[in-house]
Image (cartoon, rainbow, N blue to C red; front, side, top):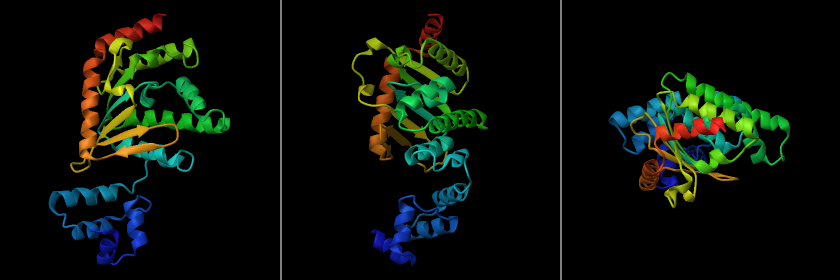
Length: 259
């Protein structure tokens, strides 16, 4: 069914339908029901999607930063806040949910390359800290499985004291029952993660697809195609099998703290 077909049958103009499909306009539960009736969706799937449309209108903590964060990153924050679990691999940086404030400040300052005022750096650091707080205070916190390349632990971001505090922060966080942390050693050789960082997010809603998030210097990409997402699942499984065990990863962190 084309955009013209769908909008015509619903009695809407094409612009309205296009903005809904591209996430540029909020959609009411009643409008969702109209769309799903047209697409012949019924039963539990209809009920789940209509319920999702109702709750989607509730404001999240990240709305306070609307207009001050890149759109792609704000979208990611919204998805992460709704996710049930997250599996991620990073080559260069500790996962944002595990960063200390000092480490985050150094990273954000480097990413902005001194092209933004200090107030912008502080605003983004505050958003990251709020993000961590919201995660830890959730009634059922997201389950995090983070695999980090050893090079990220060896890279002295902000100096030795900041790094030691960062190691201690990770050690503290892995004691939580919903956090799994592994280090991919320097001698791991070639592996699926050599080409990119990636994050896979899963959601509690029965019909909400898993999403892969890819980020680069100037943009971000969301992948929902089932076959492509499965490829990233296989990559993560291979990385998980290649990485140090959680116990050995913890021992490495403890050694780094003492250096």
